[in-house]
Length: 456
Ligand code: FAD
Image 1 (cartoon, protein in one colour):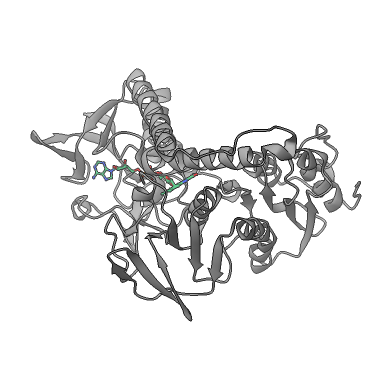
Image 2 (tube, helix red, strand yellow; image 1 turned 135 degrees about the vertical axis):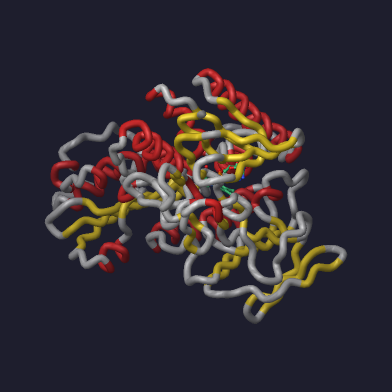
């Protein structure tokens, strides 16, 4: 009998398994693939490895501007793919070693409920049952498509296949201008593909501060990425040489279509009918203070949970919350108000807390302060002055949310995470001094502006 059986070895599941060690709990982690989940194998890590290649390529192309003379750079797509795979393999090996060092039993196979609390594992050798005091559902998500765009792995693909392209596609249509669509547009645009990105809503990165999206859109225009918003694509026509995609009044002919319209939860064939677990449109309904489902002693974490962000670090936090409740009986809820969201495009776009629109919708009387990077020394040194910081605060009160667009936005946002989570007043936070010359000085300037005493 295990204290905890976890179905799914992605960020939600493996974080729960690792954290359980702190309480001396016995753990079995059931995984049908390698450990690491979408994030390590088909998501965060491989996507960022590719974006790193694109970033290096872009930097070398600009080398002469910085007085560094190089041969015109060439992109070795095969070498970049191998490096991506090496990065992934190294992290998977490291994670497997860490799980073993923490005495987690990694059970290869497909897990599903055989009763309210027991899990059966199906593998080539047959079926065996694991008895458990507690079960954590951490089965994650898979790419979803739209009618007419069934994935064929060749002409119409998801991010799963795109991360393993063995050569760079010349002409690509990306359906969906959210985080994944924009990251691929950035990578492919930066490395020389003809890119068309279509978003049904009225801006790329829906839900993001429009001024931050403008920073990215400007860069996309420079790269020649064609972004069309407010348009729904029609049914595609696959032909011998590619795919014709109708979009609004035009049609485009591309080599491949990447569909990036979101991800669906993995809850079919889990034996949930043996339990009292409730689903909402396929997602598991959990009490977000404990991560408990409607079935006693059965928890859910990560992308499979209804109503929480589909982010690896949200999964980590929910894994910790579930295990803490199992071990102590006390709720240790995740603070969803201050989970940073980073889009790793070039330039990056990162946010935390409420946008101006969300704050107004929630009835706050808001004050907004923005500071651009145009005059910021470090940004000028780096030759990347298009960025900005935006702060949304309650009038005369605490900071409710912030967005950064520009180089290193994904690192800078963490300072603002504390400001939002700890409900800092701009005037308090503005007394702290940023090192010069740094990009983070833009945050210092924005806080001074929000406190009513701008410097530069
Ligand atoms: P998953 O990572 O999906 O893991 C679920 C695991 O469960 C899988 O390993 C699966 O094989 C296993 N499983 C499922 N069913 C069973 C079963 N019945 N039996 C056994 N095993 C089973 N998030 C970020 O925070 N930052 C990023 O930069 C980022 N980039 C991304 C880029 C891309 C291209 C994609 C697709 C996603 C990205 N994400 C990013 C999202 C992130 O990958 C997910 O939020 C995260 O992986 C969710 O973790 P999870 O543990 O809930 O599920």
